[in-house]
Image (spheres, rainbow, N blue to C red):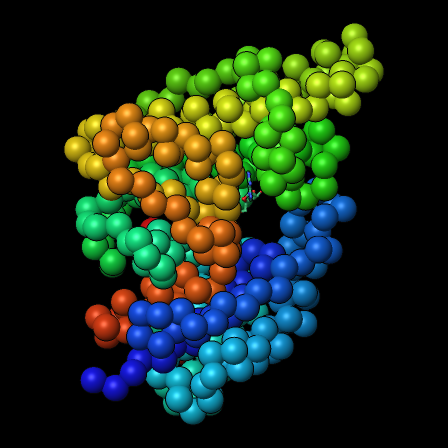
Length: 335
Ligand code: KG4
Ligand code: ZN
């Protein structure tokens, strides 16, 4: 069989990314992140789509160049159909549709959250089916039961905020720029995780909730700074370590429950929050304790990236799962 070469585009939030895979090997993964949102405390949708418009052509050109291929070699073009910010998705989606039309090649629509799961098939070691994947990002928190490349089911998810939002909103309270998750992680490294206690919600089944924790942290900080205006400054490391430990505990308890209920010993994490050192350490610890084989993608494939769109599209290509050119792009998209 001749080589399958796929150009993939990801633009669901604030990263413009393009990747090329040759068969199942991702040979380029180019990213342009958007610093413009830092001072706003969150992604500003209008600004995000404008930045995508600026970045998309250079990012795609670089991905093609780095892959050492030519446009005419490309077998199919893939894009993130959703979920995400509508204005952002439209830029990547319309680009991919135009490219497919101009080159007369098949178009492949990819679900962003399914792609986060399949990021585990970019590099070795790869999990074996069935496995569990905790997908934790700025917009989502899900436990997915993965039966095959294209056969997966959400068995637990957040009923309100995502884990990444819990990190980012706490970071905002502490005065960090957006996204603050990595900074909480950094300060937590030299803090005492038991210094402060925050609430662990009792949510049924394998679902999560983070909005109560957010309020809990807000009231706690307000109360303490009233007593001592320098509270944050003096206790920054301990606050970060305690918040991080609480979020990690909430996530890991449900992951443990899911593994037990489904009798699964292959456990993976993915999404931006899987870059968190506390979560990584907890996964390793649980792995040793419960005999799990654990998987975490390389850092560049944890956060939003087109490499994961490319690998997902590769498996869809093998299944001849193409889409029509007029497929709607959707901010909310069923799993
Ligand atoms: O998957 P992602 O890049 O984008 C979304 O699809 O949302 O995830 C971004 C999220 C942000 O909330 C960011 O703060 C969080 O991942 N994040 C982290 C860390 N690195 C990224 N949260 C905690 N610790 C980290 N080291
Ligand atoms: Zn994502």
